[in-house]
Length: 168
Image (cartoon, rainbow, N blue to C red; front, side, top):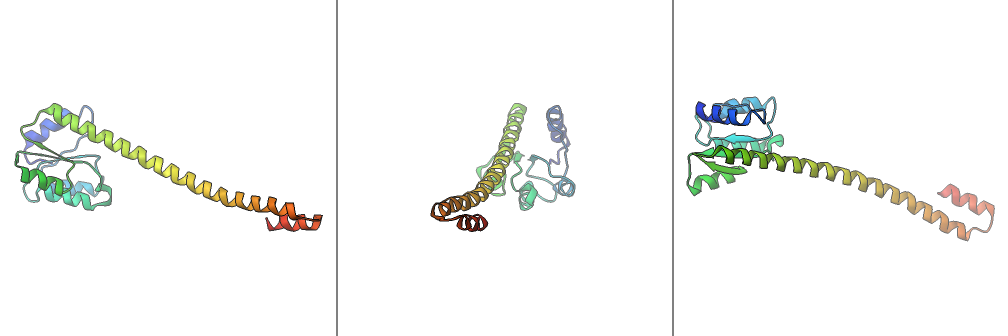
């Protein structure tokens, strides 16, 4: 999201050979698109007409599907307060214009790898939860079996064995 067409075109051209890129002139245009789909990453200018990039970032963070989506600010603002405001708004990174395209590409790639790793961790956490639930359920069954085997040791006749089996 950048109001400067040259910036949008430069970034789109550089990144579109590897990624699917959509660009917007205003934060409001971007928000309208979010009603349809949430991108994997945002590159946001700060000084936009209407809503600023900081406010857009906050709105993205308020959405359940945007809470962890990487947001990289790209801005001519090079003071510490602006960078800190970007991080406080929920930004993942802050690049000062003029930038080197190699740096932007690398930051996008790092963000992509982090997303991939988070997705893998989420999948593994779900698998571990399923396994833990299965183990806990099995433990209950095994506890009943152990109780039955202990009861067998005290059985004096076949009727007692049958009662222990039915109790199982």
